Image (cartoon, rainbow, N blue to C red; front, top):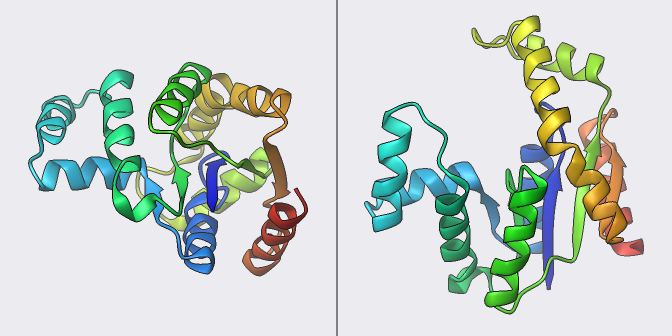
Length: 185
């Protein structure tokens, strides 16, 4: 069984690497964005609650996100493993995720941190060519990441679950290093 959490700043390649690794291990890539969209599309009770926040341009509250994650991790297709991408984003969410995993009798094997310098992230995101990606917006997103999400790196390092991989190299090299890190961890 493989159960992994992916961390890293926006533009580090989490989605790309998570999808490839999930495919290689034949486990679901569980993205919180996909969970939200799926719950809304299926018009589940949780999805309708989330949609109300999203329609107002608000962030979905932690308690609702945890319920959505709990629901998703309780489904049969994740019994053999999962790869969680986009959650948790804060130490508080990580603590609540521990409770959820304990409740459903699961645990996380490793937390993968894709480490990429800020200047490389800025260049990558600017090269995507999205209209909402300008340097000041990107640097603000990185600042928010450093304030809210980066403390998770220390949180998981202290628990000896963190595996850091250099994300500042070609995609294939990151994938290779990621596989080696998981096998040797």
